[in-house]
Length: 142
Image 1 (cartoon, rainbow, N blue to C red):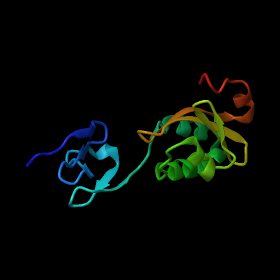
Image 2: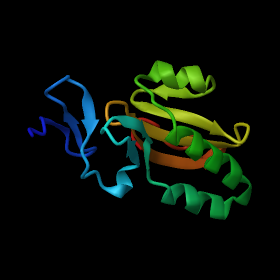
Image 3: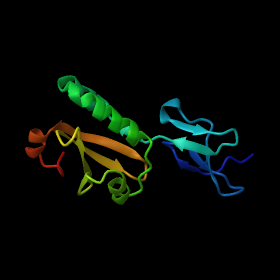
């Protein structure tokens, strides 16, 4: 049986030549957070947030930020954004600055700056800090 053309080495997605559907390769690593049914159809794929370590380091310094940051992290994992407009639809108070998105955390006490690769569904954490720290940085450069 012919397996089809590999569409993405990162996700292990292959094109099924019979019916031109995207199917899961059975060799997807566990860290990829994808789920397939027995026929190889994709059930869901979580967004990868890189990295959780800066978030954890921040909430260790500011314990009141832990709940809101974890809530943001869990919500974003389940999103499927195709454009900045999709982000604005979900988070109306988020600011789009170039290729960065700025989220207000805990009632605008903290700021989170991320870069989103919409095609690969990857969110890169670029900065997390207080409002005062945010005022000192250039969002486009972090």
